[in-house]
Amino acid sequence: MRILVIVSAGLVAIVLAVVAIGYLLPVKHDASRERMYAASPSAVFAAISTPADLPRWRRGVKSVELLPDEAGRPRFREVGSDGAITYVVEELVPERRMVTRIADKSLPFGGSWTYELMPATNGTTLRITEKGEVYNPVFRVMSRFVLGHHRTIDNYMADLDRHLAAHSARAR
Image 1 (cartoon, rainbow, N blue to C red):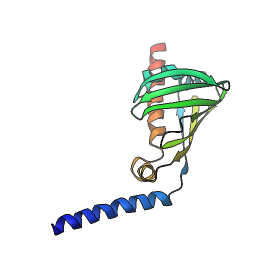
Image 2 (image 1 turned 180 degrees about the horizontal axis):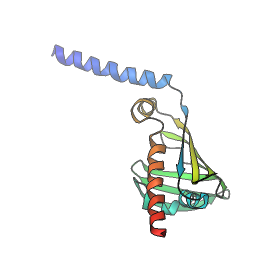
Image 3 (image 1 turned 120 degrees about the vertical axis):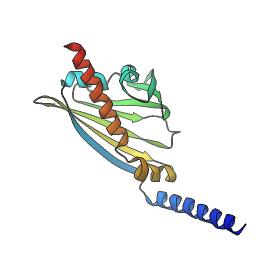
Image 4 (image 1 turned 30 degrees about the vertical axis):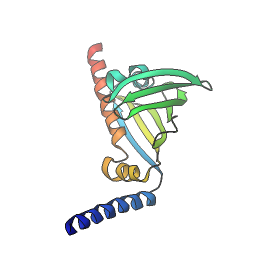
């Protein structure tokens, strides 16, 4: 019985420590990555700005539902490994820049992604900047120390690289 009490007290202490650390971490974070793609800005922009095509090349995206615009801004719902997430496109400058924001206020996280495309000698450089918010303190600890703030961007960029390479190979 004494061992059970000690183990239980230890588990409670760990949970309390995680929650306390979570409350000490900032709700907001910025994460950014940049990658060069051997594709034109128009090809890269077409891939990232066509939500209906995302399930074809993004791992973890099962479906995308196009929704009615919000104040003239396109919206879509992405269904995948993280559940259903509704996005609104806040800014769209063809072949140069796109900004999407999570529009669903009921999620334990939110924020925006800014995609910046820059022509390069052998293709296009894409910079993705996440301005994320994690509201739940336990999720904040997980996001910071277990998953990492760059993980989603890194996965997205790897998927985009595979998609553009396959598209380029088919075009030859």
